[in-house]
Image (cartoon, rainbow, N blue to C red):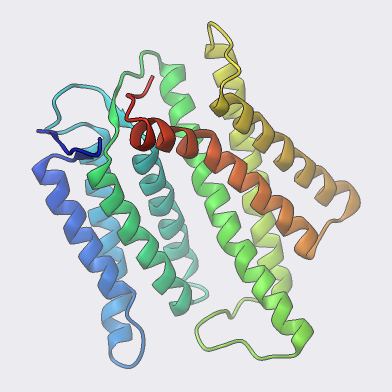
Length: 273
Protein backbone atom coordinates (compact mmCIF):
# COMPACT_ATOMS: atom_id res chain seq x y z
CA UNK A 1 0.00 0.00 0.00
CA UNK A 2 1.23 3.50 -0.83
CA UNK A 3 0.75 6.21 1.73
CA UNK A 4 0.99 9.71 0.33
CA UNK A 5 2.17 12.60 2.42
CA UNK A 6 1.29 16.25 2.06
CA UNK A 7 4.62 17.05 0.47
CA UNK A 8 3.96 14.74 -2.47
CA UNK A 9 6.34 12.00 -1.27
CA UNK A 10 5.26 8.40 -0.92
CA UNK A 11 6.14 5.77 1.61
CA UNK A 12 7.04 2.36 0.27
CA UNK A 13 5.01 -0.72 1.14
CA UNK A 14 5.34 -1.77 4.78
CA UNK A 15 7.52 -4.79 3.97
CA UNK A 16 9.94 -2.76 1.83
CA UNK A 17 10.05 -0.02 4.46
CA UNK A 18 10.97 -2.48 7.23
CA UNK A 19 13.74 -4.00 5.10
CA UNK A 20 15.02 -0.52 4.20
CA UNK A 21 15.19 0.50 7.86
CA UNK A 22 17.02 -2.72 8.71
CA UNK A 23 19.49 -2.12 5.88
CA UNK A 24 20.08 1.44 7.06
CA UNK A 25 20.70 0.17 10.62
CA UNK A 26 23.33 -2.31 9.41
CA UNK A 27 24.90 0.40 7.25
CA UNK A 28 25.13 2.58 10.38
CA UNK A 29 27.04 -0.19 12.14
CA UNK A 30 29.27 -0.59 9.07
CA UNK A 31 30.22 3.10 9.32
CA UNK A 32 31.78 2.60 12.77
CA UNK A 33 35.56 2.78 13.03
CA UNK A 34 38.21 2.17 15.62
CA UNK A 35 39.20 -0.72 17.89
CA UNK A 36 36.93 -3.74 18.22
CA UNK A 37 34.18 -1.92 16.33
CA UNK A 38 36.08 -2.49 13.09
CA UNK A 39 35.33 -6.21 13.22
CA UNK A 40 31.60 -5.65 13.65
CA UNK A 41 31.61 -2.93 10.99
CA UNK A 42 33.31 -5.19 8.45
CA UNK A 43 30.68 -7.90 9.04
CA UNK A 44 27.77 -5.47 8.98
CA UNK A 45 28.47 -4.13 5.48
CA UNK A 46 27.73 -7.38 3.58
CA UNK A 47 24.54 -7.85 5.63
CA UNK A 48 23.46 -4.29 4.86
CA UNK A 49 24.23 -4.81 1.18
CA UNK A 50 22.06 -7.93 1.00
CA UNK A 51 19.18 -6.22 2.83
CA UNK A 52 19.61 -3.27 0.46
CA UNK A 53 19.21 -5.67 -2.47
CA UNK A 54 16.01 -7.10 -0.99
CA UNK A 55 14.64 -3.57 -0.48
CA UNK A 56 15.46 -2.75 -4.11
CA UNK A 57 13.68 -5.87 -5.36
CA UNK A 58 10.60 -5.01 -3.30
CA UNK A 59 10.67 -1.35 -4.36
CA UNK A 60 11.44 -1.78 -8.05
CA UNK A 61 9.09 -4.73 -8.36
CA UNK A 62 6.28 -2.74 -6.80
CA UNK A 63 5.59 -5.47 -4.21
CA UNK A 64 2.65 -4.31 -2.13
CA UNK A 65 2.16 -1.21 -4.31
CA UNK A 66 -1.12 0.01 -5.69
CA UNK A 67 -0.27 -0.71 -9.31
CA UNK A 68 1.80 -3.23 -11.29
CA UNK A 69 5.02 -2.48 -13.13
CA UNK A 70 8.60 -1.57 -12.42
CA UNK A 71 8.83 1.39 -10.08
CA UNK A 72 11.13 4.10 -11.39
CA UNK A 73 12.16 7.44 -9.95
CA UNK A 74 15.10 9.52 -8.78
CA UNK A 75 15.46 7.79 -5.40
CA UNK A 76 15.40 4.17 -6.68
CA UNK A 77 18.06 5.13 -9.24
CA UNK A 78 20.26 6.66 -6.54
CA UNK A 79 19.70 3.60 -4.37
CA UNK A 80 20.62 1.25 -7.21
CA UNK A 81 23.75 3.27 -7.99
CA UNK A 82 24.86 3.22 -4.35
CA UNK A 83 24.21 -0.54 -4.17
CA UNK A 84 26.36 -1.20 -7.26
CA UNK A 85 29.22 1.01 -6.02
CA UNK A 86 29.18 -0.62 -2.57
CA UNK A 87 29.20 -4.05 -4.20
CA UNK A 88 32.21 -3.14 -6.35
CA UNK A 89 33.94 -1.77 -3.24
CA UNK A 90 33.22 -5.04 -1.43
CA UNK A 91 35.00 -7.01 -4.14
CA UNK A 92 37.90 -4.56 -4.28
CA UNK A 93 38.31 -4.43 -0.48
CA UNK A 94 39.22 -8.10 -0.46
CA UNK A 95 42.47 -7.07 -2.11
CA UNK A 96 42.93 -3.54 -0.73
CA UNK A 97 41.09 -2.90 2.58
CA UNK A 98 39.87 0.70 2.84
CA UNK A 99 37.96 1.06 6.14
CA UNK A 100 37.63 4.85 5.81
CA UNK A 101 36.04 4.48 2.38
CA UNK A 102 33.79 1.78 3.79
CA UNK A 103 32.50 4.23 6.39
CA UNK A 104 31.59 6.88 3.84
CA UNK A 105 29.98 4.36 1.50
CA UNK A 106 27.98 2.92 4.39
CA UNK A 107 26.55 6.37 5.12
CA UNK A 108 25.69 6.86 1.45
CA UNK A 109 24.04 3.44 1.40
CA UNK A 110 21.96 4.23 4.48
CA UNK A 111 20.77 7.55 3.09
CA UNK A 112 19.98 6.14 -0.35
CA UNK A 113 17.99 3.14 0.89
CA UNK A 114 15.93 5.32 3.23
CA UNK A 115 15.37 7.91 0.50
CA UNK A 116 14.06 5.18 -1.81
CA UNK A 117 11.69 4.04 0.94
CA UNK A 118 10.13 7.51 1.14
CA UNK A 119 10.26 8.22 -2.61
CA UNK A 120 9.80 4.80 -4.26
CA UNK A 121 8.79 6.24 -7.62
CA UNK A 122 5.75 5.26 -9.65
CA UNK A 123 4.88 2.18 -11.76
CA UNK A 124 6.35 2.20 -15.24
CA UNK A 125 5.83 -0.58 -17.78
CA UNK A 126 8.88 -1.81 -19.69
CA UNK A 127 6.89 -2.93 -22.72
CA UNK A 128 9.66 -4.43 -24.85
CA UNK A 129 12.91 -6.34 -24.24
CA UNK A 130 14.86 -3.41 -25.66
CA UNK A 131 13.28 -0.96 -23.20
CA UNK A 132 14.15 -3.33 -20.34
CA UNK A 133 17.72 -3.57 -21.67
CA UNK A 134 17.85 0.23 -21.93
CA UNK A 135 16.90 0.46 -18.26
CA UNK A 136 19.44 -2.18 -17.15
CA UNK A 137 22.26 -0.59 -19.15
CA UNK A 138 21.36 2.86 -17.80
CA UNK A 139 21.60 1.56 -14.24
CA UNK A 140 24.90 -0.11 -15.10
CA UNK A 141 26.29 3.14 -16.50
CA UNK A 142 25.33 5.00 -13.32
CA UNK A 143 27.03 2.36 -11.19
CA UNK A 144 30.23 2.25 -13.24
CA UNK A 145 30.61 6.03 -13.33
CA UNK A 146 29.78 6.15 -9.61
CA UNK A 147 32.68 3.76 -9.01
CA UNK A 148 34.88 5.88 -11.31
CA UNK A 149 34.06 9.03 -9.32
CA UNK A 150 34.89 7.26 -6.04
CA UNK A 151 38.27 6.16 -7.39
CA UNK A 152 38.83 9.59 -8.93
CA UNK A 153 38.40 11.18 -5.50
CA UNK A 154 40.89 8.70 -4.04
CA UNK A 155 43.26 9.45 -6.92
CA UNK A 156 43.07 13.22 -6.36
CA UNK A 157 43.64 12.77 -2.62
CA UNK A 158 46.65 10.51 -3.24
CA UNK A 159 48.17 12.99 -5.70
CA UNK A 160 47.71 15.87 -3.23
CA UNK A 161 49.46 13.89 -0.52
CA UNK A 162 52.26 13.05 -2.92
CA UNK A 163 52.80 16.69 -3.87
CA UNK A 164 52.70 17.77 -0.23
CA UNK A 165 54.87 14.80 0.85
CA UNK A 166 52.32 13.73 3.46
CA UNK A 167 51.72 10.11 4.46
CA UNK A 168 48.32 8.58 3.83
CA UNK A 169 46.03 8.59 6.89
CA UNK A 170 45.34 5.14 8.27
CA UNK A 171 42.64 3.34 6.37
CA UNK A 172 42.36 5.78 3.48
CA UNK A 173 44.44 4.09 0.84
CA UNK A 174 46.93 1.35 0.21
CA UNK A 175 46.73 1.04 -3.58
CA UNK A 176 49.72 2.23 -5.66
CA UNK A 177 49.01 5.50 -7.44
CA UNK A 178 49.46 4.17 -10.99
CA UNK A 179 47.26 1.16 -10.24
CA UNK A 180 44.58 3.45 -8.81
CA UNK A 181 44.77 5.64 -11.91
CA UNK A 182 44.44 2.67 -14.26
CA UNK A 183 41.48 1.31 -12.31
CA UNK A 184 39.75 4.71 -12.32
CA UNK A 185 39.87 4.99 -16.09
CA UNK A 186 38.97 1.33 -16.64
CA UNK A 187 35.70 2.20 -14.94
CA UNK A 188 35.41 5.31 -17.12
CA UNK A 189 36.00 3.41 -20.35
CA UNK A 190 33.65 0.56 -19.46
CA UNK A 191 31.03 3.07 -18.29
CA UNK A 192 31.36 4.96 -21.58
CA UNK A 193 30.77 1.77 -23.59
CA UNK A 194 27.68 0.95 -21.52
CA UNK A 195 26.42 4.54 -21.74
CA UNK A 196 26.91 4.55 -25.52
CA UNK A 197 24.86 1.36 -25.81
CA UNK A 198 22.19 2.90 -23.59
CA UNK A 199 21.99 6.02 -25.76
CA UNK A 200 21.87 3.96 -28.95
CA UNK A 201 19.01 1.78 -27.71
CA UNK A 202 17.18 4.86 -26.48
CA UNK A 203 17.55 6.47 -29.90
CA UNK A 204 16.23 3.36 -31.67
CA UNK A 205 13.36 3.01 -29.20
CA UNK A 206 12.28 6.64 -29.49
CA UNK A 207 9.20 7.07 -31.63
CA UNK A 208 9.04 10.86 -31.34
CA UNK A 209 12.26 12.68 -30.48
CA UNK A 210 11.95 15.22 -27.68
CA UNK A 211 14.62 17.73 -26.70
CA UNK A 212 13.74 17.66 -23.02
CA UNK A 213 16.09 18.15 -20.07
CA UNK A 214 16.77 14.42 -19.76
CA UNK A 215 17.82 14.12 -23.40
CA UNK A 216 19.99 17.25 -23.37
CA UNK A 217 21.84 16.40 -20.14
CA UNK A 218 22.28 12.79 -21.26
CA UNK A 219 23.83 13.76 -24.60
CA UNK A 220 26.02 16.37 -22.90
CA UNK A 221 27.31 13.78 -20.44
CA UNK A 222 28.04 11.37 -23.30
CA UNK A 223 29.98 14.10 -25.13
CA UNK A 224 32.03 14.93 -22.03
CA UNK A 225 32.91 11.27 -21.44
CA UNK A 226 33.74 10.85 -25.13
CA UNK A 227 36.10 13.83 -24.82
CA UNK A 228 37.65 12.33 -21.69
CA UNK A 229 38.23 8.92 -23.29
CA UNK A 230 39.68 10.54 -26.44
CA UNK A 231 41.87 12.90 -24.42
CA UNK A 232 43.11 10.05 -22.29
CA UNK A 233 43.87 7.82 -25.29
CA UNK A 234 45.25 10.43 -27.70
CA UNK A 235 46.72 13.12 -25.45
CA UNK A 236 47.55 11.10 -22.36
CA UNK A 237 45.41 13.18 -20.00
CA UNK A 238 46.18 12.45 -16.37
CA UNK A 239 45.70 13.85 -12.92
CA UNK A 240 43.33 16.67 -12.09
CA UNK A 241 42.65 17.55 -15.72
CA UNK A 242 41.21 14.10 -16.35
CA UNK A 243 39.29 13.86 -13.08
CA UNK A 244 37.67 17.26 -13.67
CA UNK A 245 36.24 15.92 -16.91
CA UNK A 246 35.12 12.82 -15.04
CA UNK A 247 33.30 14.85 -12.39
CA UNK A 248 31.69 17.11 -15.00
CA UNK A 249 30.42 14.15 -17.02
CA UNK A 250 29.15 12.38 -13.90
CA UNK A 251 27.29 15.50 -12.76
CA UNK A 252 25.61 15.88 -16.15
CA UNK A 253 24.67 12.20 -16.13
CA UNK A 254 23.22 12.59 -12.64
CA UNK A 255 21.15 15.56 -13.79
CA UNK A 256 19.91 13.72 -16.88
CA UNK A 257 17.70 11.30 -14.97
CA UNK A 258 17.98 11.78 -11.22
CA UNK A 259 17.93 15.57 -11.43
CA UNK A 260 14.97 15.82 -13.79
CA UNK A 261 13.00 13.17 -11.91
CA UNK A 262 13.71 14.90 -8.59
CA UNK A 263 12.21 18.10 -9.97
CA UNK A 264 9.16 16.25 -11.33
CA UNK A 265 8.52 14.05 -8.30
CA UNK A 266 9.45 16.31 -5.40
CA UNK A 267 9.36 19.94 -6.49
CA UNK A 268 6.49 19.72 -8.99
CA UNK A 269 4.82 16.56 -7.60
CA UNK A 270 4.19 15.25 -11.10
CA UNK A 271 4.14 11.55 -12.06
CA UNK A 272 6.81 9.93 -14.20
CA UNK A 273 6.06 9.97 -17.88
